[in-house]
Image (cartoon, rainbow, N blue to C red; front, side, top):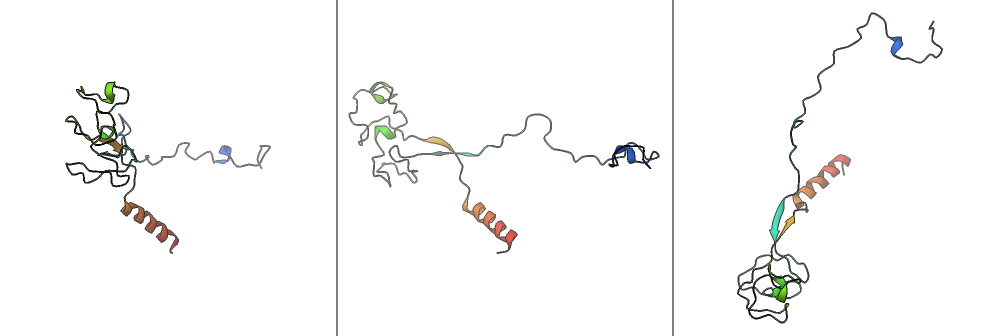
Length: 141
């Protein structure tokens, strides 16, 4: 009979001859525990988008035409990388003759199409289908 008030099993129920410390298996080695860890950020890509509708511009030929979605002129001040509404004449480059309408096509010699760096946040169609197939296999549809 036990001399304890409550009969719950606990650390005192072990036999006295048993080793106090049992050998445990070493935990698995963890990689990258020391030093800075690698940054896992999504990749980036350089893209051009229409300044009016935001459509992704692909397959641009050198005489720039119009946006395939909204038909806005692409060789206009608003599409240029030097366009800045807060600057004088709304351009960061020195301007000899100011352009009146910034959305119409012009013949500016310092024009370069604006390009931005965007993060790749979309998942490829192959990965989506792989996930869907794994889900179907899980529930055996």
